[in-house]
Each structure stands twice: as C-alpha cells, then as structure tokens.
Length: 321
Image (cartoon, rainbow, N blue to C red; front, side, top):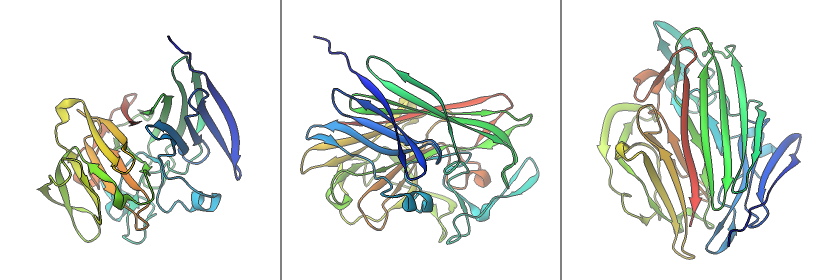
C-alpha cells in the first residue's frame, strides 16, 4: 500500500543566521541550510539500517561557522580548490584574487562560500521536497570582474539528498569557471574505523604547496572497498570511467554495516574530478566533486569557458543504505 510522505518546511535561527529545514515527518529525515552564509548545508540526517543518523559534519556554533576554517559543506563557485598565488591569466588579461589561504599563499574554494544567498523557491511534493538558493554577482569581486548568477537546489527524499548546481553567465563576455562542493561525512567516531571506495584512476602529483606539477600517477589503492586506517590524504583525482554518466564514492562502517554513497555526474564539463581530504581531527572525511583540476584557471584542466547567456548545470547526490 502506498503511504504518502509528508514534508514540512521549518525556519529557525543559528545565531544571527536564518536556517531553513526540510523534514520528512514519516521518517524524521531532514536537511537544513543557511541561506545567508553561502547557502551551505547546516545539518542532515538520513535513515540508515541502524536508524536515523547525522551523516555530515556540521558547525557546532556560530564562531566555527564564521571562521570557516574547513569550508564545511560549502558550494565552490566560480572556482574549486586552489588558484596558485591567487593569480591567473584569462583572454590576455592578468587577474589577482584575494588570498584567503595565506598558509600556502593561494586563493581557495571560490567566492560564494560565505555570500548571502536568497531563497528562490521551495517545493513540497508527495515524495520529495526541495529548496533552491541563488546568488547574483555584479562583477565587483577583486580578481574576478565577471557577472554571473549561481543557484543550488537541495532535494530531500527518503534516504537521499540530491544537489543541482547552476551557473549562468550574465556578462557580455565569456567567463572562466570551475564548480565544486565541499561536503564532510561522518559515519562513526573516527574515519580510521571506516572503509572507502574511490571511483578514480589517476592521482594528480602536486608540489609542496599542493599545486599540480603536470604529472599524474595511477591510483588503485581504493578501487575496492578497503580500510581507511591511518591513511593521510589531501589529493585530487580524475574519475576512472567518465562514460558511465555517474561515478560513486562509498564510505562504509563495518561495525554497523551502514553505508554512505556520493554520486557525481560525469561527462563533458561535468564533475570529472574528485578531491579527498581527511582533516587532522579525523572525525570526518571530505569527498569533493569538482569539474576541474586544482589550479584549473592556470592549467586549464577541466576549465569551463562559459559563453554569455550560457548556463552550466551539474548534479551530484548523497544516499545511504
């Protein structure tokens, strides 16, 4: 017998920031976002074999949110990952971005991660609910004087969250673009006790400041589900088979047999790269779908040239078992 799923939309606050929550009243699964701070995910919970579980690492207080040291669950537009020295050349013009990662003297993770997004649309259907957030750039960013409109749609349905990112070039000239997302996943107390499978083939070799050297190495260590253990990783990979349309990364907890999957859409100008990072506290792991390589504005690997009035559209998602 079909059981109608009932979704609610609730608004609360986190310090001075508004939080919008989508909730499945049948299962108590939920997704909350903070529109005014990058439109980022705040908290999530999905129904696993062992009951309702929070699956993403979240900011515990407003100080952690605003300091944003790990860029937890942020949208990365108009570039993902690092830009070497914050400098790049586009159409014979030299640009200098703000250095927001002084430890390595780079610009990192784009320009919208802390910008105020507006709620463009909320939909509640029988089997899912969604919220679309948008941000308009007027081309006044230091080092990126281009106009664009970006939006992200989060859709909650039983045991999964789907994402759709759109970026429209509203300027009268082409703009450089790479897109990413920076989710941190939890499935237990420490990632050391978990297992990992990566759908990758090549690892980008980087220098001491984590900028690609131009070399790459075959990487098969986690092509099969394998223990994470003491693995230290902050690396960029290319997806192994981009003709499969979707690539899936798997995180598995053998103690309770619960599993998180992150799928990313692959193909021309889509999410053909993956960054994996385990922070020093080792309580979570970042699995980051990206359309381009580290420093793509300089090496042009995966760089999207978005023409005036053209739109990028890419999707990825999270599911549990």
